[in-house]
View 1 (cartoon, rainbow, N blue to C red):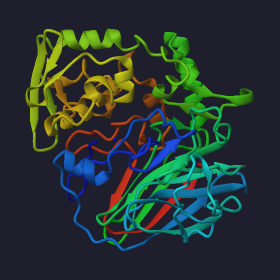
View 2: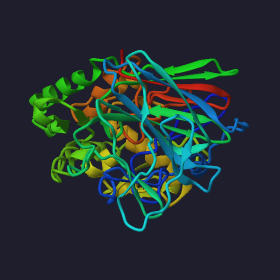
View 3: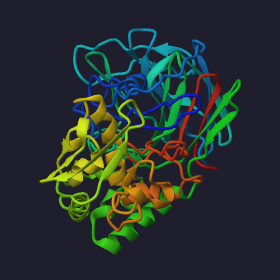
Length: 432
């Protein structure tokens, strides 16, 4: 979910993805069996795991949100979900009035209906609706056009989120998206997430007391269809199933999934996609040093391939990753939890694979040897992420799980906002 050189401190955040029970948003997908994305720790936990400093701030108990309708529809609804930090991390919704907290009770059976009205109407195009949130972890602001979303509650309680991979989910054929945030005692941290899919444009603006106005403009109204066109063009170029990432019921593109989500319906989709690139990387580093700057207490870790393992000192050895390992960033050699040093290496190594930097970065230094101009230059790369970044107005967007990895002093490419003195958080849907 992790590294950005933060203002005033080193903050490493990671998007809280759609996850299984017991994770940051206490949510499951579709039938309650879990989503394609893997669990992610909370923002503060991730910072602590990687030996990074957490901003010391004293944020107010609530924060005002402005929800803007920049679509062409008068039938747009927003939903706000998350874990109430001041109420035992209980899953909550914000009700239709934009301010009343609803904490669903734990039902006796899975897939219980949500008893309260939690759909916040945004009104006509150009309208802005104000909402107020308490301290929330794993928060999401959902938007749906010309429909309403259906949430469920499982025993726990756990909120069952809409799914883009479960055809039986009532939201499967609806046009929806979300942005992610955490609002805790230290700061508001937010991002536009394309980690699971891309569809409707979203833009973020954060007004602060002393930190100025921060913004992530997102993509324009044509951005989504440009990604659709590029996925089709990439399949024409390399014969790989990029066009299968496009979900188009009735022939009309509704969303483009990330490469990992294609595995839910086509388990062999990427079976050997990265093999040639991984072999070339392993051959290169049999004879050259590779250095990972963990950007944390472990510092620089240097190693080489010995036998068939990449040996990286205190971080341990890494076997050659599969295509699934690279796209998910969380399986095989990229499983975290063994040591702080290894947890510092994994995000940076996984990001270097997804961005195809490992063969073309001067000095073999990661992430500090590269810059966004060197990303995605190999014919074998994460073309979904490449296309998503290409359609953003400023190139910033969270397109794979470790997309917030940047060189020391480098510019954020993941489309994140964070401040300990936030006064107004504006989320606009539609791109107009």
